[in-house]
Amino acid sequence: MSNDLARFLAGSPERRELLTHLRKRPGSPAELADDLSLSRRSIQRHLGQFVERGWATKSGGTYRLTTSVTASSTNTRPT
Image (cartoon, rainbow, N blue to C red; front, side):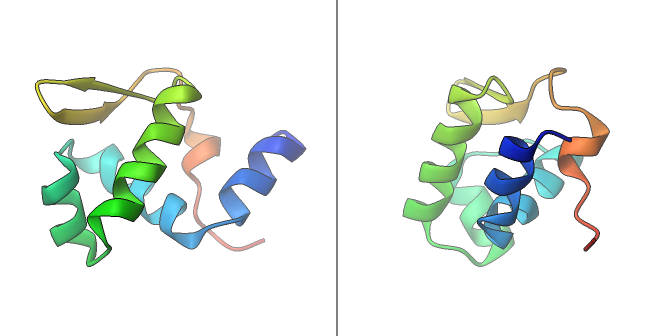
């Protein structure tokens, strides 16, 4: 994992939690906020960052991970 990627993921436990959740099931910002007990605003900000990085796509209001997200980028185990 690159240092930039590690810093990005380490900078927010919410990002890691959202990535892990999206691996299991795509969803809308409202659904994801409810599922993860996070604010919709935070979810939307993180999703925007994931889209910018090419990790997620949006279709019909639903976000899903792309194939460019590798298993190592969603590893949430502490190091």
